[in-house]
Amino acid sequence: MFEKIPLSGVSRTEWLRLRKSGIGGSDAGAVCGVNPYSSAMKIYKDKVSDDTEELNSEAVRIGNDLEDYVAKRFMESAGLKVRKSNFMYRSVEHPFMIADVDRLIVGEDAGLECKTASTYQSEQWADGKIPLHYIMQCYHYMAVLNKKAWYIAAVILGREFTYRKLVWDDELVSHLIKIEEDFWNKHIAKGVMPHPDGSKVCDEVIQQYFHTAKKESSIHLVGFDDKLKRREEILRYIAELQEEQRQIEQEVKLFMKDNESADSENFHVSWKNIDSTKLDTKRIRSEMPELYADYGKVSHSRRFEVKAA
Image (cartoon, rainbow, N blue to C red; front, top):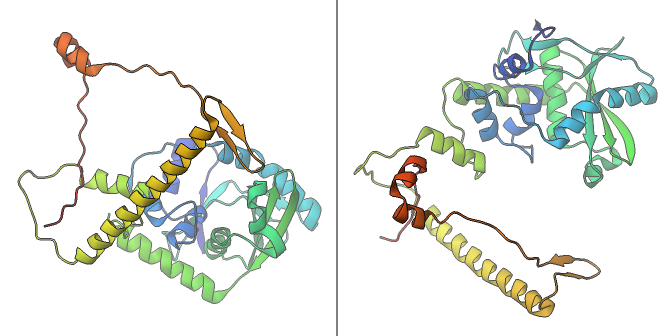
């Protein structure tokens, strides 16, 4: 069973707020740890924050604009009819699961997810394959709407159109629900961050929670010596690799001399002149301290350092 939330007349901002009220299909892959473009920490930040600013990249714009086209191509290829749904759906049994679907299939207990992909992603769709995070998205929709099948159609831009059909899998759906339930109850509902994943978003969330240190406060560090030793090893590897990188770049520069660009069968290298203007803040502070005080902006952050004992 599911609840139908009407979307007719709902503003974009309100729709974005509704999406924060549960785990949606596009969140499922990240929560399961199989989305290469997102993470559980990113989903956590989105759900607990009050921010309703929408990602507005060119890829998102293309996907939205071509949704109708993908649906039309699907109907032509599959011989099925689809219809839009003006509702958001919420599972009654698992109210943390919501769904905002692209299309529903007319006359069949199924839905349709519309995708666009670049030619660089064509291998992900070759030989009947489907990107794993999209599979999780479709099964999430099946779980919320209790549908026995879900189609996914994709246009590989400038190359081909393809579609696949996924059918209900008891074990997979049960496992997916359990993962999402644990994530919602243990993290979103309690405001407890997921385990760090090394992403920039994780840095932002940690900084947001612990933005100011208590002066002169200190605790005993327990259980991190091996990881900090590994960190030191990584930093040494990075330094060595960066030195090798600089050496390669220096060799190429000596070869190019005063030429602006160079080409081979595999690479295009540019070494162009760049002019930039920067404010001499040190001079302004010295010669016009009042102006510097009026326009100077104090920023607050925390610096993380590790030193051997």
